[in-house]
Length: 340
Ligand code: P6P
Image (tube, rainbow, N blue to C red; front, side, top):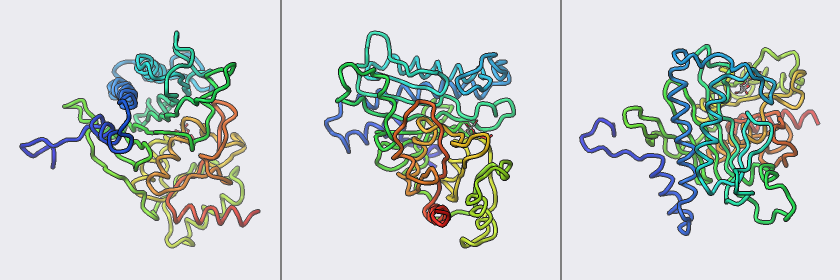
């Protein structure tokens, strides 16, 4: 309605971030919102290419293989470079780490100065681009620790547990382009208005429903799911937990989670034979999504503990990842305890 009224009354993500900063950290210098504007700009640059992928001949593989051993799509590289460029011109960013780069990056001439650390997956689910399935950008923002030992490599600062995140968000390049973020004061969604080129507030204070009607897992790996996961999913299907759950699975984390965030239910990527430690990466997939889920009233686990409590040892380490609403996650943890 706001867009149809004569007096436009839109709230852009920049306005929202500044208002939150003024409300919750009055002393803030605005450098955080400067940082976030770098991320939103990079996602708009990526969005304009994702929308035209087939036309720009960028949908094919770039020929390289990234650290994950996956055929690197040209758009992956573009999205990665866009974020590195936009964050590189934010002097308050000390270190960044990306799914596309083996090592964390410290910007030239900064040797670790700067308040913030940014970790991101520039284009998650990019193998789906060629078949026009939703993909996304996921980011996590941490503070540069003040107590790093003098001789420590500042790039170690990316290895902080998820509880240390000061902000997290994702953009889903789907039927519309939606940015969802939290700074620890609730979860808010913004829809990109292409006619304005701005992310406009469309989902204020998102709360995950206490229960849903969908579960989301790649049941193609059923044979290699640990038995307690199979028993739990069988119970979901058969209505043991109140109703029989239908399966919705897209194979793109941001799209599968965005549905779980808005509709409730549960997403599971269990350990499998192929990925005994899970497939999803802790730093730039599980942790930011977990922060958002918890801020919206949900729960995120690795099957044994709160995901955000895990102390990372390695940038690209993987974890089993189960995230959902209170009812499903309580039933899940009971199912896991029953096996101990
Ligand atoms: P599978 C995409 O490659 C991704 O990293 C996530 O976005 C998604 O949730 C998962 O992998 C899908 O994995 O094994 O079900 O294809």
